[in-house]
Image 1: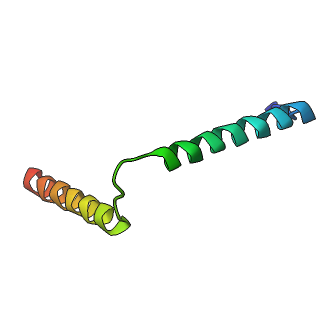
Image 2: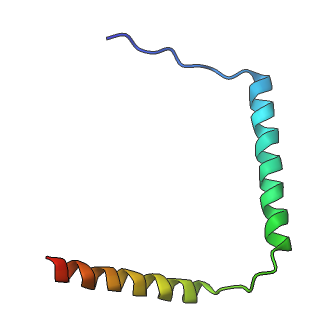
Length: 64
């Protein structure tokens, strides 16, 4: 079995990747800071998710 040789990125590739990630991250943070939608608490989101899971479990039991 022939092993594939790993591709080692050049320093310029790593620098470009780092710059792209930094730009992406800064854009995400800025968009989040400018978002005017009302905040939703973690507890509320978890409660809604648990209700969805519970309904799915009920539906699954009815089908079984």
